[in-house]
Figure 1 (cartoon, helix red, strand yellow):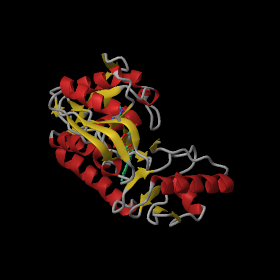
Figure 2 (cartoon, rainbow, N blue to C red; figure 1 turned 90 degrees about the vertical axis):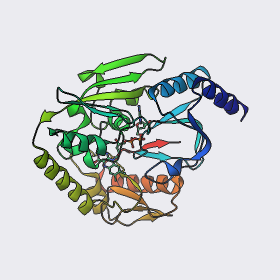
Figure 3 (tube, protein in one colour; figure 1 turned 60 degrees about the horizontal axis):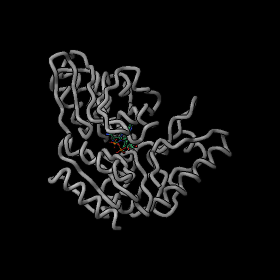
Figure 4 (cartoon, rainbow, N blue to C red; figure 1 turned 30 degrees about the vertical axis):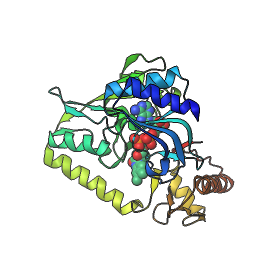
Length: 304
Ligand SMILES: Cc1cc2nc3c(=O)[nH]c(=O)nc-3n(C[C@H](O)[C@H](O)[C@H](O)COP(=O)(O)OP(=O)(O)OC[C@H]3O[C@@H](n4cnc5c(N)ncnc54)[C@H](O)[C@@H]3O)c2cc1C
């Protein structure tokens, strides 16, 4: 596509060292291991490259999708028209003297939690086993066990839809169950967040993280590609329990399957297409609605 070539030239002019790939298969960048080619896959290595790339895409009206670690995304088999901007190389994590930790968008939660633990800071243990980046976790208000991002994120620096660098503090994040203000503004790009933690005991923090990790290994099908819990928790119920009670454990569409180990996880048994997964999602939603009158809403972001 001609306008893509022009766009690559403009990106190279604005950020000569930036990594750009054409027709990059999204299945290589999502934990579902599903998804066709993105026209453009842009991977900035510095904050300056990121802001320059966003400016070029905006000026040329090229639609773009922000990608962290791809652990909460189901991407179409036809792939993505436009650009994917992957933040994974922007991954600085800094522990500050006031018991805060600041991290760039692409920093993995597991690294942030480990840095906090080694510095004797408690509050981020819940995040240790969530396979996402800081940016994706703020967008989703990721949470597990006794914590959520809402509970620790104090401040976030982001680029808005006009290219301005802005800051959100506290309640301005609009955190709620698996959502934040960023869901309403998909072109807002998290650059960095600062998290408030507390003094704690490193050994006790490590014990807690190990306990959470063991619970995941015991309950979750971590040996298959997935995006974690496919559905949000419906009020008053657990999605996995309803799916199991509907007799759907092990149900497959093509290579997409309701996990035998945890019915809340839909897994890719190997070579599943997005279409397989979407049909399985619909089958599960229909069956649970018919049997229990409960609507299961997808937690995973579907990119079609
Ligand atoms: C095995 C497994 C277990 C999981 N367990 C949990 C769990 O316990 N709790 C939980 O909450 N989740 C869980 N998840 C889901 C997932 O890890 C989280 O939702 C995580 O926060 C997603 O982060 P990510 O970087 O992978 O986001 P991505 O999947 O890359 O993106 C998710 C959304 O965030 C947006 N986004 C990404 N980066 C930015 C940015 N810089 N600025 C603005 N928007 C951005 C994307 O555009 C997209 O809309 C699990 C997933 C797996 C595979």
